[in-house]
Amino acid sequence: MKKVLLSLVLILTGVLLIVGCGGGDDGGDAGGDSGGAAAQSIEVLMNDIYFGEENDNVANPPTWTVDAGARVRVSAENAGVLEHNWAIVEQGAELPDTITDPAQIADILIYDIGEIAGGDSSSGTFNAPAAGTYTVICTIAAHYPSMQGVLQVNG
Ligand SMILES: [Cu+2]
Image (cartoon, rainbow, N blue to C red; front, side, top):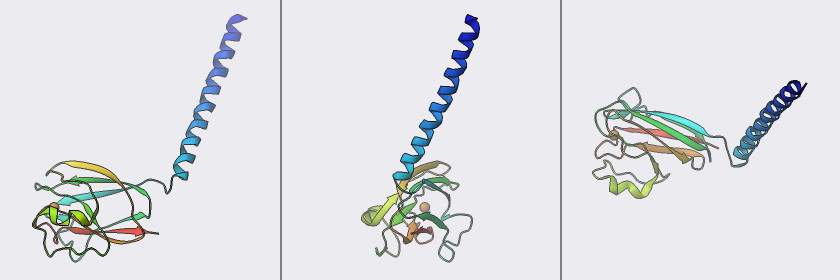
């Protein structure tokens, strides 16, 4: 009889734990929702010297699309041998014809993932800016304009 009681207690404890965990997860989701838009993720492929699969970024810039205000995770893979960066430029900012020193455009960047060595991968997160179309560049000297893309932020 004692064994039966003990089993019942164990089963009840298990049920309570499962219910408790479920409630905790719901609470976490609700907290995330109240904090703004759901998290989003984008992937970036880097090559020498362009983003994406084709070396025609000037004519056909790769486009990444996110929602305004979303917390965005960006994962970048550098398939080239050169260093590359992925940087979002402020709207209306003037870019030089070519970049000779990353310091010259540091003030007009909203976010950059940081320089990634050839063959390496990296990731980072940023809060998507206001709705609009943003130019994305590689900040390594002389990689822009051949290495560029577009961040499309939907309102
Ligand atoms: Cu580059």
